[in-house]
Length: 539
Ligand code: F6P
Image (cartoon, rainbow, N blue to C red; front, side):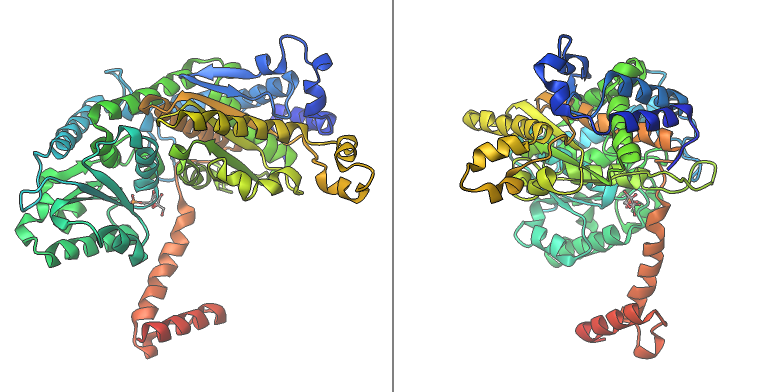
């Protein structure tokens, strides 16, 4: 796989030189004098720390990776994004999620953003204080966010992460799946008189969201809410306010986002209304401030010490030179439970592309498969494969040093697991060591208890999970995605790849509902599946 940039071919040569080198050897005390690898490859920014030293990199690797970032124009792409240039050319749009957290009065759309934020804060305060009531005068105790993809994953991830800051009187729920079980399981045991639905959809045309929103409206009405009072139980967030009003939501209860906010980058906008209701406007500001800290770091830190640049370029190193297919994010924090699924959309919907900006197809790999699960659960499930399987999966471990809960004695166990896993991945267990453990009676055990080691990991360190540190962490990954997109020369802000399935889905849905004679022809597999489902649905 090739890329015409000089640093790319230099990295290929460099890869051949160091591919068989062992992290274990590099870390051997004799080979790791001061400044040690840990000292040379640990960096900080926006309150976060990143230890890259257990990666298969040397000083020369980092130098070349930074050179590649420069040659690929990462800085120009970054600056264009911050300035509000059209960095999403296939949709003719800017991507200004950074403006949503900018404090500078000359930042793009500053006044518009501030006005919408003030409207959100007023509403959130009213709901939180109990001043905003349902149609029978009861305070709101349940907030149901109905949205999918970017209109769900970000808010859900943040609300879960910051549960310790949540107002106890209100429970947040997130419904995304068009499978009726999702909505039904959420609403079957809650009181409609105490429930507020937030319908979040940038387009306000998304099938799943619209279906759930309509069922939710029926539920309110069936439980006695007069049509004229529905406004007390429904608000909408969209870049298409006319559609929201058509749906029946009062104009004053429509919160606007804009076409220059990408769905998967939108939690900072009114899409984050459920977050603001859960943690309050002040903490929401903290979340934005953390992201802004990372924005500043991304713009100002030299590339050699720039966290999003280093994280992104090390990802490129594995994807394009080692040929890694996937990478794992393992937060050692239950609060960050939904971070991996949020990152799946952020990374793969952004960079899972084959067409370059100039319309030609890439002949090198783009987005790795992103996946993950909180440690320590993953250790007791799939870590076996990470340690001894045939595929090398680079890992981002995320460690939160200070717990947000009172069970302090759990924390050393949690952190010990995190640090021990990265140590084990790096060290492995040699044949000699395995022989000693197996002993003379069990030589057949040796291959089974050997670990290849040399498995690369990054450890991100968060002092404590606050709204501010979480904002910085999310922005770190957002910018990492831009860094990689720049090197791959692709547009990370569109998502044409989701369209074909949506179009065919409409045809299949019509076929499931149609009279037999009207069912359209399909390939034999799809036709058989439709026939089977029609029988089950008894059409
Ligand atoms: O189908 C993919 C997608 O368009 C995502 O990009 C987006 O986050 C999600 O659907 C939801 O879209 P909307 O907010 O318009 O309902």
